Structure formats: C-alpha cells, structure tokens
Amino acid sequence: MTSEPTTGAAEATTDATAWWADAVIYQVYPRSFADGNGDGMGDLVGVTERLNYLADLGVDAVWLSPFYTSPQADAGYDVADYRDVDPRFGTLADFDEMLREAHDLGLKIIVDLVPNHTSDEHAWFQEALDAAEGSAARDRYIFRDGRGEGGAEPPNNWQSIFGGPAWTRLTNDDGTPGQWYLHLFDTKQPDLNWENPEVRAEMEDVLRFWLDRGVDGFRVDVAHGMVKAEGLPDWSAKVAMVAGNENEEVTGGAAEEGAAEGNMAPSGENTPPYFDQEGVHEIYRAWHRVLAEYDGDRMMVAEAWVEPMSRIFRYVRSDEMHQAFNFGFLLAGWDAARIHANVSETLTEAAAVNAPATWVLSNHDTVRHSTRYGLADPTSFPKGIAAEDEQPDEELGLARGRAAALIMLGLPGSAYVYQGDELGLPEHTTLDASVRQDPSFFRTEGAERGRDGCRVPLPWEADAASYGFSGDSPDAEPWLPQPESFEQYAADQQVNVAGSTYELYRQALSLRSQLSVGSGALEWTELNQPDAGILAYRNGKVQLVANLSGEAYSLPEGAGVLLVSDESALTNDGGGTETLAPNAAVWLTA
Ligand code: NOJ
Image (tube, rainbow, N blue to C red; front, side, top):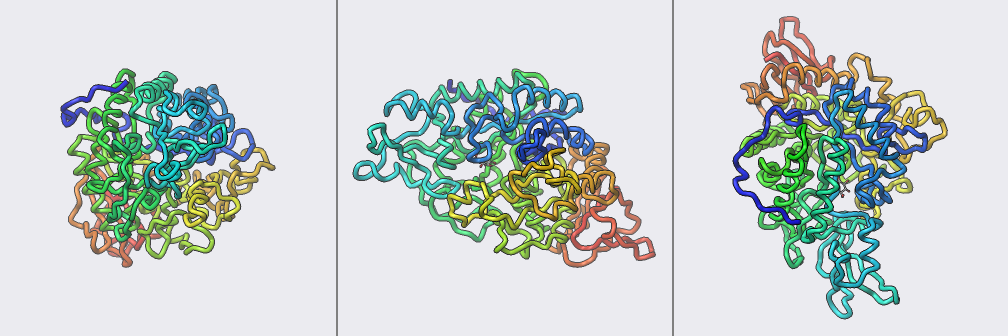
C-alpha cells in the first residue's frame, strides 16, 4: 500500500545517542571475506569464525553485502529470494548463528536490501514471463511495447548503467517478438514497478522478515532509484559531471553517468528520469515507520549517488533514513582542498537536517583507495584497473591510505571501513580478462575493467594456501585469484605487530571510542591550509594534522602525539619541534 505523505520533515529528532550516530561500520563482502566450507567462496560460517577479529579491531557494526538466494549475475545484487540465504553462503540457521554471536560480541548487524530490481530468476519475474501482456503479474515490473515498426525499437533511449541498452525484448511462446522490460543494470536485473502497491507491501514485509530475525539495520541499494518519472521520457541531457569527474561531459543515458559502479547521477534540472525522483521519499517515510515499531534504534543507510550534496541529505530528513553514504568524501581523493571542501559542506548539510555525517574511503564498487592514491593523479577514479593500464606506486598509496584513515576516523559522525582497508590492502590491478566476473566488464566489452579488483578474497595467513582464505582446505581455489603481494598484507602478519596497518586502525578505533571522537564537533584550526596541502582540525580532545603537500611540515612546538600514521614520518629536530613527512597524518592532543 502507498503510505501517507508526512509533513514537517524538517522538525529534527535525530537521537544523538543512537548507536549508529557515531558508529564505525565494517563492510563484509561475504564471497570474499572468509570461506568456512572450503569451496573457494566466502560464506556466513566464515564470517562467524572471524567475528572475534572484527570485535578485536574495535568496530561497532558489520554491514553484509547480499547473501540471499541469487544466480549471482551481479554478485548477489540480483536477488531471487529476499527471505533466504543462497546455498553458496549457507543457510538461514547459519545467519541466525552469525547474528547471535555478533550480538554476543557487541557487534550490530546491517544487511543489504536491494529494492530497485530483482533477479530475473525471482518467482515474480518468472510468473511475469508466463503471464499475458497487461496482466497483474507483468505490472510488478516495467514492461512496455516497443517503438517503431513492429515495436522493434526500445520504449525509450535509456542506457543500462553497466553499458548497453536498459531494455531487453522478450520472445513470445510462438516465437514472435514480445514486449520489452526495463533493467537499469544487467539484463538479469529487471526493475520493479514501484507504482504497484503490491511491490511496496512486499518490500515492507521483507524488512519485517529481517527485523524479526533481529538485524539492526539495512543498507539500501540504489536508494535514489525505484521511482521513475511518469511516462518514462527519453533522457538526452548533456551535463557537467559530478564531483570527481568535473571535467567530463556526459551525453545521454545512464551508461555514461557512473563514476564508480555507475550509480553516480547528475542532479538538479538534468536529473535523469530514473533517479532521485521526489516519489522515493514517500517510500522511506513508510519504511521509517516500520523500523520505528521495533526496539533498539534500527537504522537504514542510503546508497544514493546524487548531486548536489543537499539532495543527498534529503534522504536523511528526520522521518526518512538515518544515514546516507558520503561518496563525495571518497571521490575527493588525496587532495587537501577537495577533502576540506567536502568535510565542511558535509557537516553543514548534516547539521541542517540534524543527521550524522558519514565517511567512507572504499567499497566493493570502487578501486581501493590505497591504489587510487598511488596513481599519478591521486584524485583520479578509474573504473577498474588492468595490467595494460597505469599501475600505482603501491608504497606511496599505502602511506597515503594510512594517513587518510586518521583523517577519516578523527571526524565526527559515522565511518565505514571496507574489508581489507584495515590491512592496507591494494586493488588487484593485473587480473586477467579470463577471470573477470563483473557484468560491467562484459557489457562494456572490457572498456570498463570492472570492480573485480577490489573484490579479491582476503589474505588471512601468509603461509597458507589461498593465504588462509579457505581455512584448512589446501585445494580450494579462491573465486578470484589473489596477487602474490597479498602475502605481506595477510592478517597474521599484522595483528599484534607494532606499526602494522591493522594496529594503526585498532589504535585509532580505540582512541576514537575513548575520546568520544564520533560524537564530537569539528573546527578547523589555525594550522589548516588546504591550498598548501595541510589539513588541520580539532575535534574534542583530538587535533589532526595531515600533510598532503610535497614538503615536510613542522608541527607546533611541544605538540603531544597521540597517534601517527607511520612512526618514521615523525622526526625530531632535537629542539622539541617535530616534523611531519609528506603523505602522513598525526593525531595530537588538542
Ligand atoms: C549498487 C551496488 O553497490 C552494486 O554493487 C550493484 O551492482 C548495483 N547497486 C546494482 O544493484
């Protein structure tokens, strides 16, 4: 059923004490985190076995990318059954056990919800294929007659975000060509029709299914999608690109919009008719009411690639979602002026709707930040990297990645850590085309290298087969090959090893919690000179100085050092003045 629109969204009621307001949330990509059954693919038993590692690291919550029944055409973002676990990842009982153990360790669990589209193997779509044109079964999706003679042309000119047309034509049982259906992503991901009350009721029921099992929240996939402009008009705007790619110009459909996995959309008057439509907010107000019926501050975080930033914060007005990802921070790259601008704007916009700011450096759709920061242009944002492309300076990227962790974790609000960030893991930049699996690679005929390089199974033990990813199963082949360099990044080389990236994250998270950094307030200090490559802010008891310039930087005399991104980056001139090397950051006592 369609929910009642509410008024007065501006009267802010965010509970600053809610667990999510200042949480550090660790993203688990289940197929690549830990393999508990030795088949080369990660699973829920693997997650359960490693929960202690996450608790020791000091994160507050875990967000799991999809583990639902799915043919895996888009690594699980093509859901065939929203209420079950894919056998590759385990069973509902495995999920319940994982949730119970996580809660026992004090970790919250957030699951992914994919409401814009289902898999073409979902029972509803299968029913629609067998049903007549104009039937109730077809009305759950977006079926249309084609244009032109015999309906041979797609209903409009929209392009799939993964490349190619956003429409696929059916063949009728008698062999004649039939209707077309819309899929903003892969052919195997038909878009649901959110004008249909049955779709709304079903997704609310899915929310309740997982809330009843005890999940603490949802990451909402393509939260700016779902509602399409009436009449599905063609879209051929020519617009300036969003942050991170400002110099690019985009013509036409969604294929060219993607800054990361393709979800980035320009907004405002050139908003495409399939993103950021006003009608989506009514859906989130209804979902907010569902979550509010449950105890324990259940939450939703929006994956909404929209611009300008003020439009992102419309998703977290007080009666809608609770958080939205801040992709502008991720896209700022290693550039002090861009980070400074993003942080200032984020905090202003967040305060305007009384929502917490969020911060993120990497996820399963982006080239890992340590690798991006090691490219000649450390603000560049390639759609995957292959052996024939520019290769990063791995050491430089790692130093900057560690410094960026201190920049991010010293900020007020909630921070997202992608699995492997805490190990300083780089992208796999030389994956062979023959092993790639991302649909965007195939739909663009390899023009986009795709997202496989950031999805490579984690290294746990340097000396074990598949670096311990498949535990005691020496013959297991990881679903994507790991680069040899993963040996040095393996968790067992870093846990309890002074100076390791893991220990840097652990110390930062511990201080962050002890000093209530997440619930603090930021002020830029007199040392802040973003145009000269120096970032400096104070947040309660922590003062950050980050050196993004090419020169060593003298810290204020007598500064007390809480934590430095790399011990060797601090040198003492013998007279009490500490110097901070380039590509490093430090937390000082405020
Ligand atoms: C965003 C997800 O993060 C991405 O991995 C997926 O391909 C698209 N949405 C489509 O569901």
